[in-house]
Image (cartoon, rainbow, N blue to C red; front, side):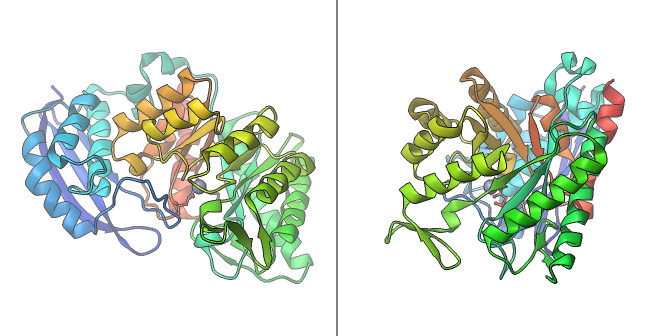
Length: 403
Ligand code: PGA
Ligand code: ZN
């Protein structure tokens, strides 16, 4: 019934105005799925390889489509993704392009779900997800800089975390209110700010002032809303690290790796941070382990560039105690199967798996379903902007569906 009947590929725009790969998958029974690849700016060195969209499409038409059409079932995700790996023949999707692979993988999942008449989160998570009672808390990027905006904070993302919200919808609206409250606090300080790639404010201030601004904005909304809102960070420290000099550079400040760890540990306590992603360089497993030892009982220490959704790198983290959570981005590894394997491995090791968008996004909503299907504690989707609200609004709909 879910046998793949056709796969078509095209270039569409992403939120930065760059071309990206979109795939359509049609099944024999008339099921249809469409998905588009996101794209990172602060990409990890160890991610699967994205190819220019026109090259990725040509390679996928030549090598992948013949292995899919009339040959695999969209309802069997492992079969689809194994065909993509076989068509690629490398260990980093450098032949097909991880962008073509992930678009096809996600479109097939949607076509499989459509054919059997299930919402995607249920199809991906198994039917026990029908009685979902827990939902991921959206982490809302409200202030940021790094690779996502010039002349702004060194820390890439300050993320509102409405952990006390009574529902997904309340959490979604709270994050938007924190985003608006940040604009008010900046205005009161006479600071004008543009927006970065993910829609976060990108003010020309240093990290220390950004902490004051976000702390104030979060407090105002928490008080008005009457539930707990914390915040977290994506430091994206690999972008700050100078490997030759062995220092992290943030504005005029230089920190040795030991000083960077002390700085982060101090911030976790001072601001009661709920979440700290990539606080150290993507090669520093030992540093992650030391930091996790110090603060892992009270915050999530999450590896994004460190793990790149890759089970081999995750295994190294599990062995060394580096981090207590992994960020899951399907396009970092190329297929939904690989992403699910990473989630499963993390869960077995007692780690949390947080699902995430990329800085370059489309209206695709797959990650909202993936986060629910895998019972993620948090989902990173941004806060405002159409490509971000597409996921947030889908989460609201899923929550309504599932209870
Ligand atoms: P990217 O940033 O999509 O530009 O890699 C997001 C992140 O680092 O989490
Ligand atoms: Zn990150």
